[in-house]
Image (cartoon, rainbow, N blue to C red):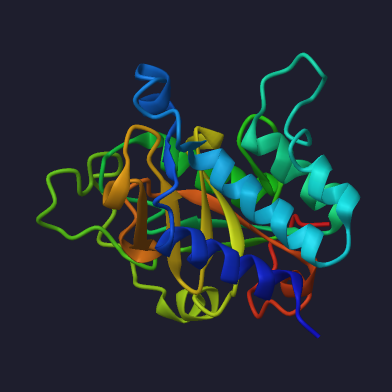
Length: 241
């Protein structure tokens, strides 16, 4: 039997490889006439297209429709990826995983990453929308000592110890939905790679695939469907319910 994750994985890759009919939403808005024959897409639309398709293929037509509005707290609210993730966790038994290449010395020197890591470890939540987390995978790509931002936040702490074991387990996950910068950016995750859309591009530059280890948005959260959540071989956060 085909799984939700299997269907979503296939759709994620299919859109990445075949998107000649699409254009970034901002680019289309800048010149509607020029791009009138193209379908508009962006980071959250990519996520919703895949989730909706997977639920439909699994025979859940109602959820295929509902995912398009699940990110709104009210009918008048803006759509937020964090709210979508929160409802997938609390209503559909998805599981949240906090990830960060270096939880002590982020390569961009931004304390948002270290703060988010502490909150994840102590409170099991991501972003100000309090999205529940169950696992935490960090330090899979420690910042090098020759990086100008190394020790920018904690000059008295040495280089972070590499944690490659958890990363290898993370890379086995067939499908996930990702959030970065507290939900500012959304993306999809397939077997160690981030798949994303750039809303100001068309053609080859519209979609991008990057190994999570090298993903420039750094600390993030990945949410995985129930069919994968129950099989995760990752340490559970002590504060997780």
